Length: 126
Image 1 (tube, rainbow, N blue to C red):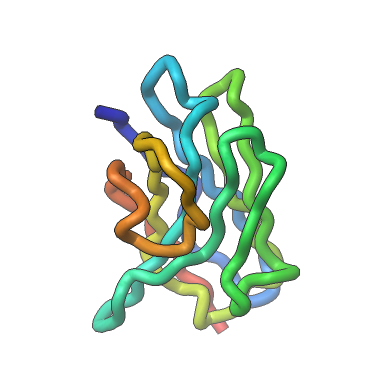
Image 2: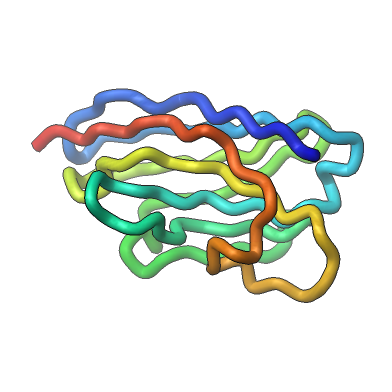
């Protein structure tokens, strides 16, 4: 079992930036595909970004492409989400997810991940 802890959320004005971090336990963190998802009240949890185990492959939701950047530091067991040019519609609880099972994965679907953090809230004021 992998434990994931997110931090870095908060209140920011539209146009501002935040960097979310997700610290993971586990000696083989470098083998996990990692993802970020978000959920607003009354809405389903949605894909934001994913990164392969090596960091060599990333993918983003169209709504955040060009504004958000996912990265990872396997030496520190941390995955990041740099969020720039934030918009009020980016307000949500952001969840970190890890895929620790084998097999091919695109990383865009909730079912592809078997470990989840408890989330960190981001509020973007207009």
